[in-house]
Image (cartoon, rainbow over all chains, first blue to last red; front, side):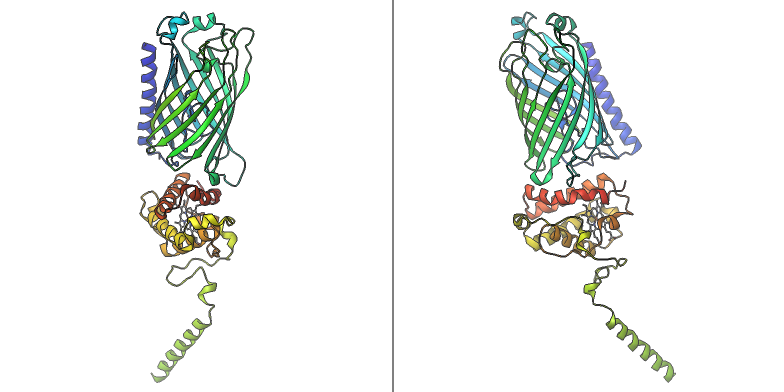
Length: 293
Length: 172
Ligand code: HEM
């Protein structure tokens, strides 16, 4: 609990510092077009809900900075999954993010022998760097906006993870994301390849019995821009299947993201996470709020 | 004294004659009546910076040439009023920008206009424009298109043609 508030305070402080520094140095903010910063993923990066994109979070353009905080809540039949985090986008080139995930087993905890209300927590620190392209403006080229990223993940339930066969309670994911806006069709396309060992994002640790190798996984998003403020889309994310005790499924969702302004947006989704730790068909509603600049 | 007056009269006549001899304003799009003149340049549709859209539904959605003229007019008015762009536009002639912008949009939207203005890189090269300036202009264009009632998907057809011009317009 103390660690949690400590990190929460740290992230809030980071954002406050950044905001005041921005004001002090007279740096500009908020120059990007509505929704082009994406929303916040469950891992804290800018993107869709499940997939990290090549765009930098927030509304800062090349000469500017942007930042935001988010909170996401997902109610599943047998679990509750929530995330909050903070992220900054620097000069539309670099993104730094922090997210804290809580996977609450609720009553299911007792059935899994973990105890009622048992929760896994995971901290994720992310770095993303845009290496090529301009997703929005390069409308005469096929080249998408491309970014490379890394996410360091640390889980707080090492002994349980070891008991279910996970090799490690921490790990690093590496990814390459490509995002393209097809303006004349009002579509946003994204494809990401992620090298990962993570089981259920890392909530169930990294690697498994006899499997400690990175595998390449795919994240795809297609969103239709219904108007300036509203995007409607689908996402799909493949996952490794390292653990022996339970099968891990791919994830999918359909989402609606609405920007009230450049300072506030909400994302609602229906998410299918498949089977999680032997409990079948984990589907449910997801709501995420993002506030920033 | 008499001689001096005669000389003045002759000079005045000569002046009037030479004014009549200059090419008509049609061929001088850099110095149109009612507009501030700019340095002469070579006229070409290629200066518009994008090929025309042939889908007639797009032109229809913009309400033809008249709709386009209203949109260009609104965009220029908004650009001169918006504190983000006003200082950049202030030294220039809104009448000329409205006319040439309207021609450019009309050409690109397949309205059959000729573009008589300058090339994008040429016009904007000394302004030191930033990506944020570009986005501000796009936001005002979206506002102008909204005011004309152009559906979002059709707005994006025009924006898709204008977007690559960012490389010519933004220099910082
Ligand atoms: C794709 C984006 C843009 C397009 C298509 C565009 C188009 C045009 C056109 C057609 C003209 C008149 C050309 C002429 O007089 O021959 C013009 C002039 C001008 N534009 Fe842009 N423009 C763009 C972006 C911008 C931006 C981002 C700004 C600043 C925020 C800007 C500021 C100006 C100014 C101040 C003039 C007047 C220059 C002069 O009369 O010498 N433009 N623009």
